[in-house]
Length: 156
Image (tube, rainbow, N blue to C red; front, top):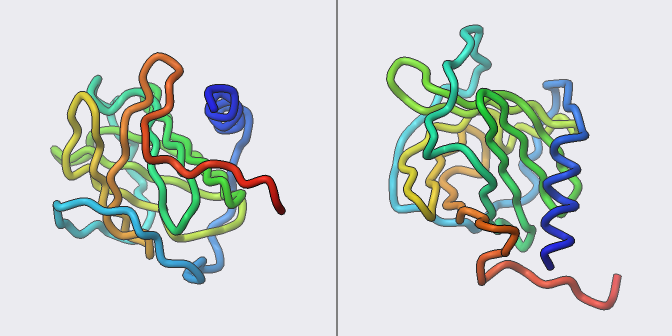
């Protein structure tokens, strides 16, 4: 499991994303968060300031039966799903709010602009402007995966 998480995180660092057409609304994620907020679905022309220390790190979640890995380092953000979506962009403070802006290799609009509702030592709640809506992520600490993530099946 730890090797799989390391591989996912490595894919995030090595993969660049581009494009912004097409809408991926074929699946509805089932991640949950209790906060509500709205975010602008358009791109931002302003550069965010560096993300707060609390937002920095690797975050894991599940949505629609797929594992999600969100990595934030300084102003950079990247997201990978086990379904093959790979996205990268920025994370940081804009107008007093923590925001995440991503572009994905498959042109998905599921997670393009996210507003951070809350962040703690162990969890991150984000409301995405795309079809993902509200999601809660768990911090990955010390190379260990948190409990509750899906496991690989032996079949294809």
